[in-house]
Image 1 (spheres, protein in one colour):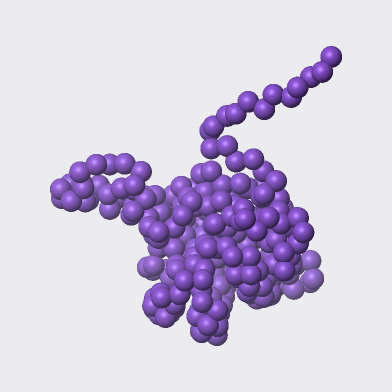
Image 2: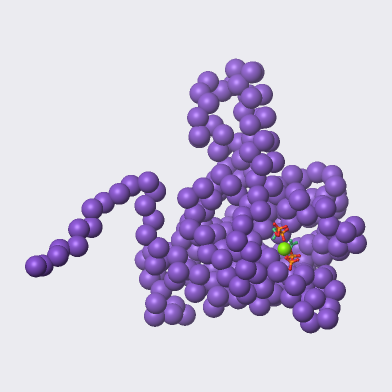
Length: 248
Ligand code: IPE
Ligand code: IPE
Ligand code: MG
């Protein structure tokens, strides 16, 4: 299924996506914002299929941020119920596809207890899968994650369980300690910001911003973003001379 522009040997190992633009998608059709969240489900599952077909190891999606509690109460309530229903309806399908699901974020109030239990059930069900890991960021904030990790680190240090404070020590206290660095970070809907998503893990990610609103995004668009990623030169601070020979 590869487009001819895609190099199957240089795939991003970890793709992270800020699924944005649901509200605008709905409003532009004369619908309420919640209809946009509902329409986003098909985009998510198409992208999961696309990522599986490409052979991406880690896909992390931003579903609800620590800042999203500021939205109107009825939208927040809808999103809690919608995510619960999505997991109930589709966790078995994710399991059958060989996807390991992991949630990142704070798993406590005001996230409903029923939803937290369902997250844990989904993680347990899919824990042994190895085709791809789908990270779902829910009640996730990058500042909260680093703060939670730092608190645990300080506690372990004070108790004498930790001798050296280094990057590894902090990383191993993140919500998913196995999460690799983000290679490609995609945001839909034309906004060019990262909104508190994976600030530690995406420190060296290639950023791709697309105009498409999330419900219109799909596996073809994912592939295009990967092609764009492959055009970039990742330097990680290094430098090499590429002298152009000038004949004269
Ligand atoms: C993203 O779409 C979904 C969530 C943040 C839950 P939005 O709801 O932010 O849609 P816009 O940005 O208002 O169009
Ligand atoms: C980021 O989108 C959060 C999610 C996609 C879940 P927002 O729509 O909440 O971000 P801002 O408010 O435009 O920065
Ligand atoms: Mg938005």
